[in-house]
Amino acid sequence: MDLKKDVLERFLRYVQIDTQSNEESTSYPSTAKQMVLLNLLAEELRALGVPNVQQDEYGYVMATLPSTLPPTHPTANRVPTIGFLAHVDTSPEVTGANVRPQVIPAYQGGVITLVGDPSQKIDPAESVELSNSMGHTLVTTDGTTLLGADNKCGVAEIMTAVAYLMAHPEIEHGPIAIGFTPDEEVGRGAEYFDVTKFGATYAYTLDGSVAGEVQFETFSADAVTITFHGRNQHPGYAKDKMVNAIKLASEFLARLPKDHLSPETTSNYEGFVHPYGIEGGVEETRIKMLLRDFSEEKLLEYRIFLQGLAQEIKTLEPRAEITLEFRESYRNMRATLNKVHHVVEYAEEAIRRVGFEPASTPVRGGTDGSRLTAMGLPTPNLFTGAYNYHSLREWASVDTMVKAVETVVELVKLWAERGERES
Ligand SMILES: [Zn+2]
Image (cartoon, rainbow, N blue to C red):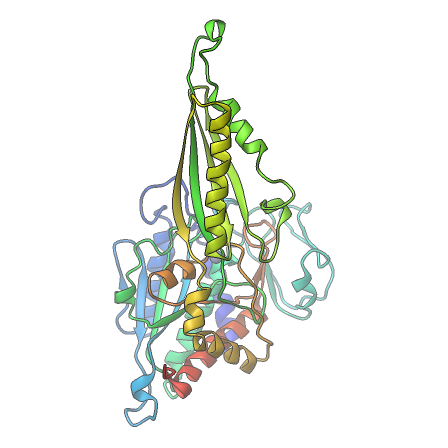
């Protein structure tokens, strides 16, 4: 079986299906069109002969490849079910309708000009991974849409690995769970995911980027809505009566740090508080904010900091009411994965076996894996070979995609060789 041909064909087929998710929607999945690809994947899994392919009312596709280990195999009884997951939806930020993927058979270096909009260029000076992809087969957009390599690279890689394993029953592996999910881009990918039904002890999302990457730390995140309650009056007769919530909210925003604790001035392991929305009037104004850090203690400090700022504003204007409504979004998976670190170590070993040096970078965001880890399914994230996510200049290296397929195959072999670690 030609892995490169297979993964490319699948990828080109999947990216031409519009699966954009929608933040405003209250249905699940957030858009019906995601079902087109989910249905197709269920069909393709059945056509490959995978038993037990299921699709539930939320759209989640789940399937299990049974163990190929003979009962006499030394690890036969202690190989856990390992899951592989990818999301089918694409970002609401950039259109995903009428995607026209462009294949560059052997990249020879230099700037790539996109044919549908020559003002869109992929420049190796801005996209360092491009210089590491000389001679690779690349896929880009035509410059008018996103590509959807996030996360259809992952979908195509998992499907190709399944096809390969089904064609090679002689490869020894334990039980493998496959899952395709909607609505990751709107932060709801794991919302109705039935971890028990999925049946895996550990899982990996294929939703990373750079070759060799294995990610097991993400931000911990909270959100807060801060409501300033003022008092409205006819402005002509407002003396000593009006309390303007807009001005109080502005006062609050002006006191937020600018040279630190902001997305625009932080990187790596630094956290932030980030106002991303404001609406209201004199009577009532609401600010929506994100709180992000790798440490949960820091996150708590940020909560206290914002409460303190609100208190300062309240002292300025005691007639105002200020309420802060905090919500937990997701948690860093690192603490959990440290307890089962072999899940990461096996991934690193599989990555070495396909010829890369494993690298771990902190994710300044969340993945479906952060949610799933909190739900009891430890799920680090693996590379896919896709770059410039959520952009007209999104691109993928098919050669690196093949390495991701091989990583999945090596990983299930490794789990069979080594089995669950005695704790
Ligand atoms: Zn993604």
